Image (cartoon, rainbow, N blue to C red):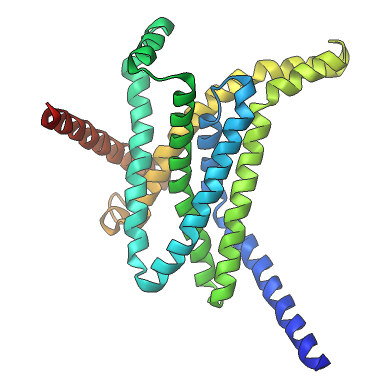
Length: 293
């Protein structure tokens, strides 16, 4: 009886050891997409009133956890029933990311001459309150997180499958990586969006003197710069992630332009895919509008 109990404990210890080692490998392989995820979500979590930053970020974080709870069983089921279906899901997600990234570039290039009062007027014309605008931004952030989460989960699962681990290890490792991704990314985002508050506290406690006073001013002044940088990096990340999906998941594109560096190929395919998605979306809106009239 005792020997059977200790044998079970030994099996559990071996399983946990496999999970720890494989999770480390999977986390390293998802590091690139996690960096993109951080840039994208940090950009999306900013631009709110100071009092709303943490509530908004918490709403996005909860949405991210729900995304993972939805994605994990679906990916396991698809992989078991029909593995190629995962590719199609990723490609559709890549089109959405490319659309969002390219749309931001188009907005910057062709609509940046709008003044503040014009933007306010547009919002008022739409009849949306600040609460509705906030909800729309949160929904957009959660949708983007959903696509990025799919890729994180699939990369993690692919790592476990390469190692030929049993099904229980696949579930534990992939779920653990998904959890670490959410906590890690949104934990860092929370630190970024509260930089200015930390700076003000340092200034107040140090009476605006010495090293901590200087550090406080640096944090306050750095936040707008960091947000702008993250905005640019986040937009590029959306396009690059989409391009990476197209390059690695579409067989024809994978072998196209073999002499081009991977970074350039991903950027090019991401832009082309985004332009196509924007064109289809614009055409679709016009068709729907014409039908309604």
